[in-house]
Amino acid sequence: MATTSSMTQVIIFAISLLLVAVHADYYRQRPPVTPSPYVPHPRLPLPTPRPKPVYHPPTTPRYPAGSFPRLFIDPHNAVRSSLGLPPLVWDGRLANYATWWANQRRYDCSLTHSTGPYGENLFWGSGSDWKPGFAVQSWIVEGRTYNYNTNSCEGSGMCGHYTQIVWRDTKRLGCASVVCENGAGVFITCNYDPPGNYVGEKPY
Image 1 (cartoon, rainbow, N blue to C red):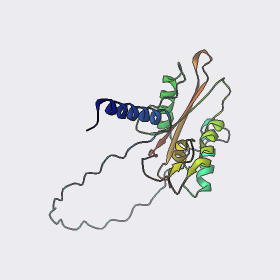
Image 2: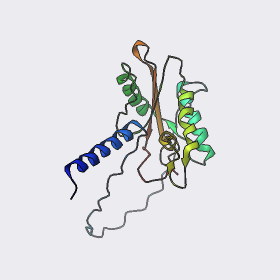
Image 3: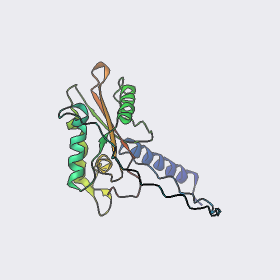
Image 4: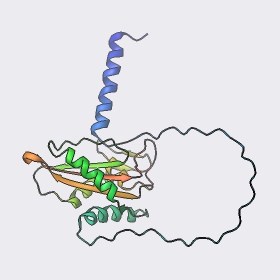
């Protein structure tokens, strides 16, 4: 039987691992799938055939080159295109969420995740001149440490920002940037829907 001292060491070690995970990349567990019980349905008469509706693909706003959304979308989609992945589209709802969280961090510039329903990448830089493209590139370069075969980051580097960018199922993106108070730097956040970085799953 383990002694009280050894149990205490195990608990402290587990807590330290949790803290490292919180302050490193942002991963999430998929909720367990509970199968619904089978309920037989009575046979219903076949409906009267109707003409098929004409499909009109949803239209997405076109943002001019150099606009705030394009500064984020273009580098995201460049790396996704290189892997044969579908492009992301800018989503106003996600941008509003990102703006809300950036404003929460305006006073401390802390790299703290919102832990909301979306995927999330964060960036901080000292000074006030950091641009969206640099933040996105700082996430993309993590791809150099990502090993697809083992689905892990090599060495001591992080790669979770990169895997979120190239997560196949993600379709929408919204970002925000804020200059923090008292010269604390620049805080940039991007949110992704559907989210990625599910533990044990490959991004594509």
